[in-house]
Structures are given as structure tokens and as C-alpha cells.
Length: 276
Image (cartoon, rainbow, N blue to C red; front, side, top):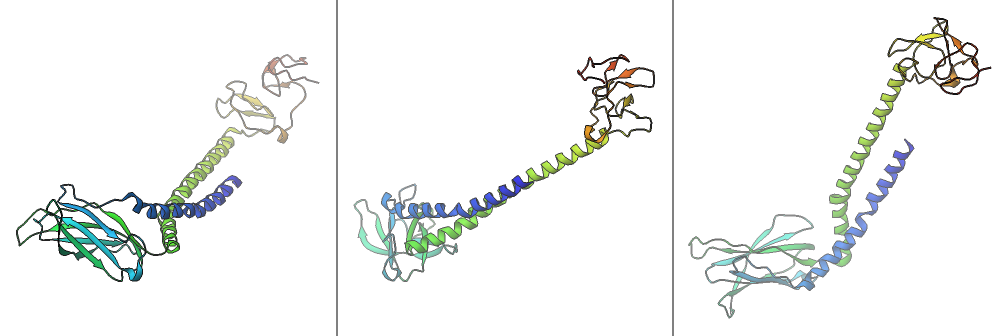
């Protein structure tokens, strides 16, 4: 069972170390996201060009969210989620501006002041106009802003990695180890039981009966001469004569393999054992 102890030790070391590089890679992904220039838009393009400025830590937690919407909408809502706290997305009504794009879309903005420390995601949703029921349209979600230092973001990523990755990987790893351990214990128990059933009881006359076919067998033989059953007898624990053993029917047998031999034989024709 020593191998299982080492597997457990190495498993714990791996699980404890694995989240460290993973968290660092996630921080790189978060900061690299801005360079792709992603914008939030709806599938039907009635909401386009959504984003946030700045993307990373700003002074006093001040961020400006913006998007352009079709005139058919009575307004646009901003849905904001702080990933650190994983709280329900805040629904914020954006302010309509007097700026209209070349294709007739109206620009909406929302000025978020004193935004709490965190790592955010957001999306936009068009709302009804003048009580007329229009189809609500949502944009895809974007990452941002990052209202924290790089070290602060890394610590949060590391905490999340330990909870979401190390925990589940650790549970799966040790569950597999437990199954392997149980399987080995069951196999060893089965082998012990099989050995116990296969090992016959030797009588006072040095003879016993094979538990499988009931044939008479000489003490010290490891296999039944009739059916070949393995008795799992350790030859160090029994006294094996150096000459052929005489059976009940005046026949002689090799004490090593049970082969029938001549009374004066010096070598067993079955296994090559020499008799004195």
C-alpha cells in the first residue's frame, strides 16, 4: 500500500500547485481582452458598439458605459455583474444623449461613479417605448471593467481557482484512488479466500483428498495428479520425501509433481526430479 501513500502525497502537491499558474494565465487573459477591441451588439444590429471606458483601474472607480440604439427603443438598460461577489447583475437605466450616428442610431451612456473593487462583466438590453410592446433585444456579454490592481485580481483568480478547480479535481483524483484501493483490497481478499479453499487438510497418513475432484494426493504435492488443481502449498512448510511416495493402491508417485513413477525410479519422467 506504500504506492497509494505516494500517489496521495503527489496528488496533494499537484492540486495545491496547479491553481498558481492557472490564476496567472487568467490574469493575462483578462488584461489581454481589451486589445481585441470587442464591442457589444445585438444579433439584429438594433443595438451596436457597446463598451466601457476605461477598461482597467480608473481614478475614484469612475467608468463610462456607452452604446448606440435604434430610435424604436424607449431606453437602454445596462446589466452589470461583479464577478468577485457573484451578485445578481445590477440593472441601470442609461441616459439618452443628443448624439445620433450616421445610420440614425441614438447614443446612450451611463456614468458609474465609485464603482466597488471588482472584476466585472456587462451587457445591454433595449426596453419598450411609450408603452408600446416591442421586442426586447439583448447584446452579448463583455468582460470589464477591471476595477482592481493586478495583484488584487491575481489573488481573486487564485481563490477562485482553488475553489472551482482544485476542489473538483481533488475530489475526482481521490475518488479514483479510493476505487483503485478498494479494487486491490477486494482482489487480495479473493486471492486469500481462493488459496484457503484450495489448500487441503493433510491426514495422519500423509494423504489428503483434492477439494476439486476428491482424488487422493500425497502430502507435499503442489498440484492434483488427477485434475491439476493448485493447492497453494508453500513447499517450505511441508516435509517432502526424497523418494517416490507409495499410494494406497501400491502405486508410486513423484513427490514434486504427482506423476506416477516406477518403484525404483531415480528420475521423475514428469518434472525431472531426482530421487535418492
